[in-house]
Length: 407
Image (cartoon, rainbow, N blue to C red; front, side, top):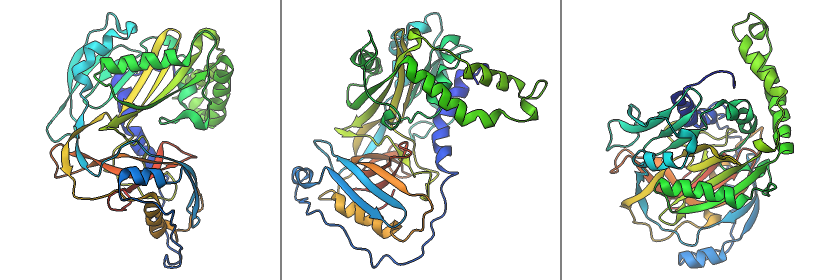
């Protein structure tokens, strides 16, 4: 809760590893109750003689049902250009830009930048990964080789705002609970501009997309009420009563439930999708939390979420900072068209008996990062069709646009 003083490194560990943990508990074993032979394949008449032809003949919206497991009512998003090449991923090396990034965040003034060694490196070229930290009791900056995390280092932001607005906020896109718009006297373009400037300071110029959602006083109070509704049961019991082990957590929760916000607390939540070699990087993690299996070796999302207030940038969480390296493999002549990808899902999930439907609201052709044991760096980027779960947009089903495999 907000009353506990967490170290920045503890916050970083939560940020890095919680998305993967969230996928696993809700993944149920697949159960086949029939055969897939009777399923009718879809055919959209897509011309994949070239990528330009495929893009021009792919429908912009599709509606399909795949057994009782998956319902598709989705917009289709394709980049202007795409490649059949599998790339060696390279880390974006935010640690090398920590000084420039810190200069963009006035709240870090007076905090020293300290270089540490992170024992967990997913990159084959690094036994340990360098990590630059500017830390305080309440927050600070943490710049790793492929992630960038910042929490405003004072009590103002952590008094309840962060927990309130983050409790149900998807990392990849807040359109499921918020609408784009403007705050009085503080434009969305201004908030986006601050995030873009920070990325330029971090050595990033290429951005696939960026959206800003206003958190007005009314929205903040609505999110506060939503937070209380979701977590009230989590602070019940003898251990939360006076004298109990977690009595302070109960007091913090009650204080948050009575929090009152004003115009000074208003801000935007900014979502930004990264790209590599002209193709967006997959923002959604593998799996859907419902019905679909997820590999524990899969990587998390590639995206940025920031909170930008009238005071400036208050929080940044940039995950999956993978850049385009050299070509690893390029033996495929063409990318798999969308209808073939949907048919691949039919073959795998068409006879799955699912208690909870996965509702796909967006399908995008993007680069999907995968762990690889043989390539130069340890991580590869594979072109894939990303079927996002609209009920849980941080997660998606991913189909290789080269082989048709669910990855």
